[in-house]
Length: 247
Image 1 (cartoon, rainbow, N blue to C red):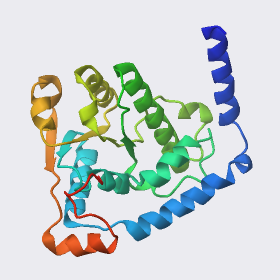
Image 2 (cartoon, rainbow, N blue to C red):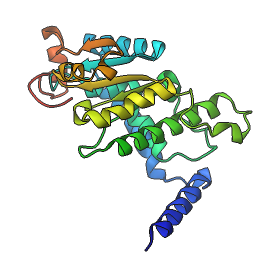
Image 3 (tube, one colour):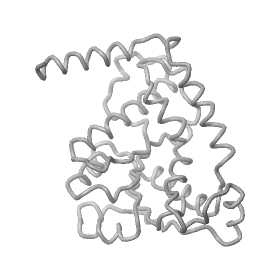
Image 4 (cartoon, rainbow, N blue to C red):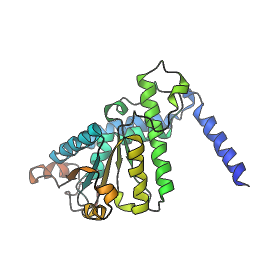
């Protein structure tokens, strides 16, 4: 099979999926969304560190700067990012996204208009850039369509539009210097706020990359919860933060 034939088949699949009626959506997806909401409401503990992280994200999103968050494994960086972006709800919705179907968009999407992206272990600048545009397009189109029902569909095709306000890249340590160019370039081209989350030492590594590090406007050190909040973690049968790799 030639590359041309493969591309034509992939395009046909995308078009067919994009214009499928809403009532043909998988019922299991709706059930999973409801279960994700229930888990998020029941299992997440809002700690002082999470509130500080949320304030940090709000500042980066408001000013459209680049922010850097680092901390040891197990303190809750990823959990806080998933909670802030509501990614357990929004991520599956965008995966099942249908063009011009905005009525059933999760209301959580309008709260922060944020994307959470975790790069694969084996990545390239092209893959990272393609992934970022994929999530940005779908989130921005959905928010725009939800807020402006009267827009002509042709007006909703701006690539990487302004309705996505924050991009959080988790596990940013996986990105080597060439791949780091992708989120930096995406930030420069679209004006979206950018947060890189990584392990301690990521700030020193980025310092060797002045094109990016010179643009960091916010720095957040995510620390373990105070001792007074440790019993709340134990009520969830979780290991105390810092003792495991439950980020």
